Amino acid sequence: MSEQLPKEHVDILLAAAIAAPSMHNTQPWRFEVEGHVIDVYLDGSRTLPAEDPTGRAMRIAAGAATFNLRCAAENLGYGTWFGLAPYPEEPDLLARVVLEPTGARNDDLLDLAAQIPYRHTDRHPADATPLADDVRVALLQAAYAEGAELTWLGETEVHTLLDLVLDTDLREIHDWHRRTERSHWVGGERTADGIPSSALGPRSTSYPAAVRDMGTRPADRLRDERQFEERPELAILSTYFDDPADQVVAGAALERVLLTATRAGVSASFLNQPLEYDDLRTKVQRLTQRPGNAHMIIRFGRTRTHTGTARRPVADFLPEEQS
Image 1: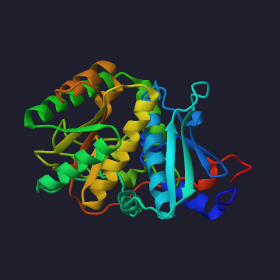
Image 2 (image 1 turned 90 degrees about the vertical axis):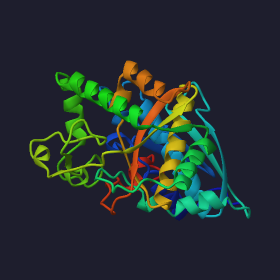
Image 3 (image 1 turned 60 degrees about the horizontal axis):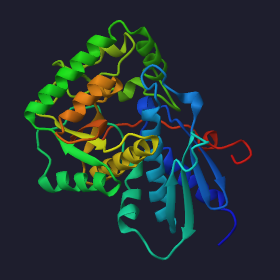
């Protein structure tokens, strides 16, 4: 085994990692490569202090990036083993991934690697076709494989959740910190990070709706209106514990779920605003009727292919001497 990963392999691995979702597409990761070890760090310059004061969403994003890295490694012929939050004295170091050439293949990771370029957050209306039972089961199994739990919501729970969305919006009316922070990352034309206006999707004709209206600018609030599904397919992703490592686990589970959905022709978007308040987050978890800590509220559906959001160049995520 060579002492250092080939640069072209590093580029492929990190391009896959940074394709992962992150809150407002902040891409809050940085990487260090030493030999066959890739360390995944949080990038403290890309925090969301108003909407994500504890950094939980950043750690979920880092977990998703780590999962993509593992999939891409499999595609390059490497096996991986990893540790989460390995050093308490380095809180920004969330995962250490070791890559070794192997002839044994993980067919599931290899298959999911092919879905990475096609996964994106889809804020458009879904058709009325319910998800097939085998797809639902596959998504449950994907979350479980990474140590998390996915719970589908029934009609009553969906209505309760939409009430929590309304509660969140009412709280935000006078919270200029949140609005200002979001406007920094959302809207306009963007070619490297954040959410451009073109990816916001239409506004819903009804309110509250099972889609988050991310619009922050006057022009974005004049987008076309569409009717969204009356019976949205919503699920809650949770873990039993809520330490930083558990949040990274939630991110890995999230990305395995999303790539599994993409493989099945199913898109996803997020309705996470109630999770930004501790008391509402507790209420969201109660909807699952299980102990644990809610990390993501995911809306699934079948829609046409739409444009995703851009990513920064791989070199931006590496120390200058490694880029």
